[in-house]
Amino acid sequence: MKTQLALPITKVQNSRIAETDFSNLVFGRTISDHMFVADYKNGEWCDARIVPYASLNLNPANATLHYGQSIFEGLKAYRNEEGKILIFRADANWRRLNESAERMCMPELPEEIFMEGLTQLIDLDRNWVPTAKGASLYIRPFMFATDDYIGVKPSDTYTFIILTCPVGNYYNKPVSVKVETTFTRATEGGTGAAKTAGNYAASLYPARQAQKAGYDQLLWTDGKSHSKIEESGTMNIMFKINGKLITAPTHTGTILKGITRDSVIQLAKDWNEPLEERFLTVSELETALQEGTFEEAFGTGTAATIAHVQRINVNGKDYDLPQKPTDAFSHRVLAELDGIKYGLVQDPHKWILSV
Image (cartoon, rainbow, N blue to C red; front, side, top):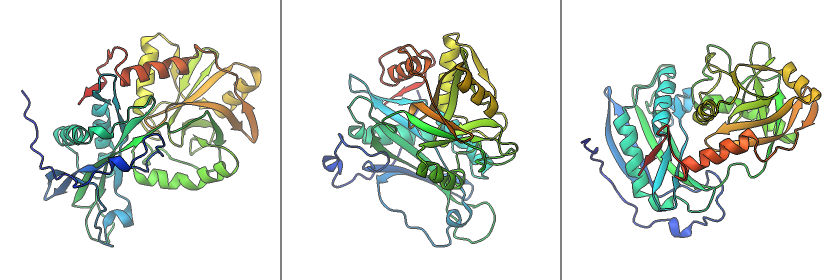
């Protein structure tokens, strides 16, 4: 039998949960009582502990502030009808964190530290997991450099933290997106496949320009020709055209290996849904929208799960998407994923970790 990692736990003196309005949760604004912390120094992880959520004390010469060695993950915990806490695909998030760490010259995090820190933190703050339909506990593991040194080199020390926050829906309505053909999110050989802070910082300006023009997100295209659609700002993107699901492949290293994306692909294969992992070109998209072979588009991601797309702007022209039938693939796959996450249907792929 596996021995539980002995974690020292310092509990808050006064919980903030009574002050929290669970009927009005703004995504990412309300943080739960505790956080898990572990440090890396002298070539090993040490001092793993759970402590009250609090501000960090950083030296102005902190390496992350100057050179951006920072990676993160995002996953969710759900409360089922019996009150049990269910975490969706935590092992996949741990593996992807380490893939990002390798690309960013950061140390690998052992599975035991990730999983024990995660499960013991969630167990301690289990009352923070919302009960309302569609609500969940968002979990943010992250790692950053802690050397107090202004020099361009990988840090020798790091801190890993897990914090959590109760959340409602990320998108409350279908989204409008704009195909971006000027700015670039990632290029081959870059850090596009890593979940690193700098990728998101670089996307903020073009995303804000799109939002000013009335769009929720961008559809990023490849950095070389801007002719192939890659992903959206907060999610991978999938299209259904002429009966086939189409989504960009991840082998180029320019696209994040989305865990919700992977889950949707697995369910599509389970259901024998026609699927192509290939790049959809902008011209193909435009032709399908004009000729009526376009059926639906949706984003996939931890925050949004499935985000329905209602409008796409291509080459300056808006296309309103057709009304989806009740049996549309995106509706079916959202219902199936929610069923698995809340323990309402079978979990054949063992995606759920119960706490």
